[in-house]
Length: 125
Image (cartoon, helix red, strand yellow):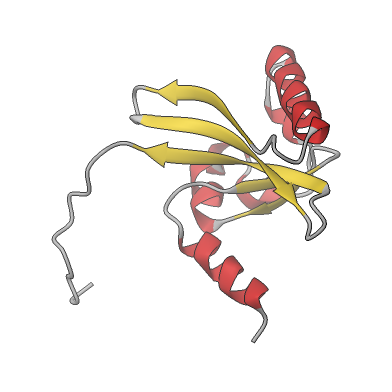
């Protein structure tokens, strides 16, 4: 079985929103958590649209600057962008590269800081 099937399964099971964009800033993939999180803005209908259209001009320019920085060096792969106090999470932009290290796109990574509240190993779910 191809490794890409495993990677897709990992992303689709993630509780954090994952929105992947190509270098033209087009949304090419949204995991189920992202579709739900951005339902008010169109959910899955956002796929194929420009991510820049979903942001104010100033934010769009910042996104372009980060992507340009990713392109400057194979070592430029992650940029901290914000902390969301309400959701207690840090947000990063992450470079996506092909097997040769060429920049092919990017995504936004959310790292929540809240401790898990579920019981360990609950098999009845």
